[in-house]
Length: 280
Ligand code: X90
Image (cartoon, rainbow, N blue to C red; front, side):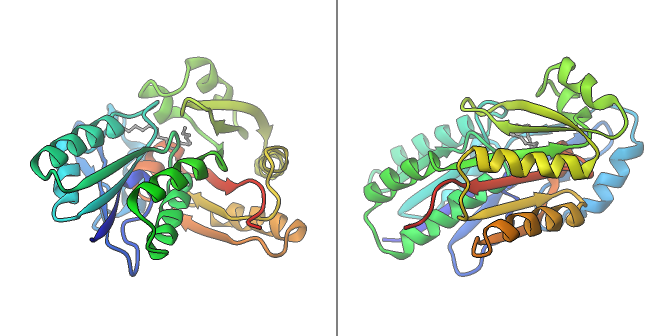
């Protein structure tokens, strides 16, 4: 019985070592160009080009066919999608799962609505790797991963929400708030998988301090943290240091946003996925 993990590229993970894994790309589109969020993408080039681009830009989720192609050949699939609250990716994955199971009655797919983006998907994927390695039955993994989702959260700090606003993913009121120079929005993925604003902060230092405050409020006590940044490694490192000084043993990884998250989180953006509670 072979297990496979598939996620869309909102996970910021194009590859994973030692795991049967496929990343299904979302695309970023302007009137002139299409950027496919896969390992051939020059993320820095895309971000720079979009900065001066005056026309319309948007994104598109993977198609049913894209998901289906990624499932091909696997006996048991875990498909992890960006929040259904902001994207059609999850629905496309569900449709693909239905077709895959109809065509292969002996195979099974669990489609997971992350209700989030970026590093929270990474946490789900890492947990799946762990459960698969333990050789647990498919149904047991399904139950455990659903339970795990209650333990994980996403916070973010954004310098600009222009692309989110232009594409109808945050309210114009929120967009106006960050229009002011130096104002950052700190927020979280809501229970419905949408952006929830928690506060606005003046300057990056204050924003990071706020994130850390919310992490503690939300029950962080030294477990895993995954930080994705859009060309802002310094801020990610600063937050890491802050966390480590309180919880020296916590397991923290930093990664760069790939295309989709870079488009929406924009330059300077941070996305922080973390577990509450402890592992023992
Ligand atoms: O289907 C599509 O075209 C993709 C749409 C994706 C829209 C939102 C992506 C957000 C990425 C922003 C910060 C954190 C968001 C919190 C999620 C609940 C990054």
